[in-house]
Length: 74
Image (tube, rainbow, N blue to C red):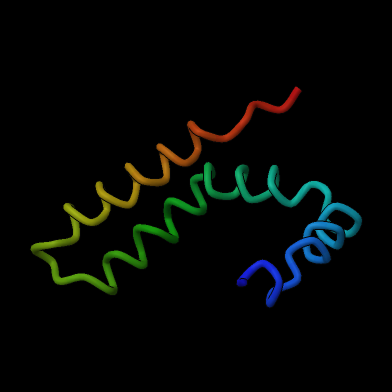
């Protein structure tokens, strides 16, 4: 139902035609020091001090797992 409502096929067609390198660009950005600085700043301004280290480790772990699951470009 959601695939029909959001017109998934049309989206993927648009993405392939207009943004063919989007996946690689997102992977590069999420893997960058700049993204880690943004993540750190977000955690430091969002979570209480006593939870910051825990959540920073948690989010970095999730991101590292996501990065390692991405296919390697040929």
